Picture (cartoon, rainbow, N blue to C red):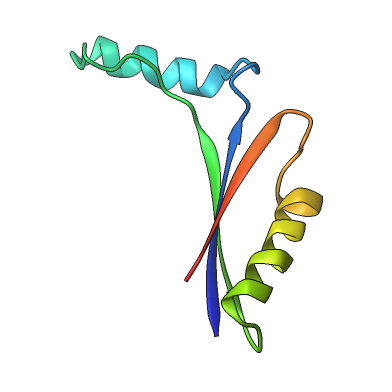
Length: 80
């Protein structure tokens, strides 16, 4: 069984209002060293009957077609 993680974040060119709100809250609470916050989504998948290489290809396709919006988001896939 292969396990995969998909991290989806807004592209740097896209304004992130939730990240900005969290950033402002952290600064207000005294965490002055926080320079920027970007929020995102995390998916963990278990896949049966696939090698790690096959799982990477399938999960990459899932991320591109379903888990992310390629117009405004980028993603990263990790497979164990």
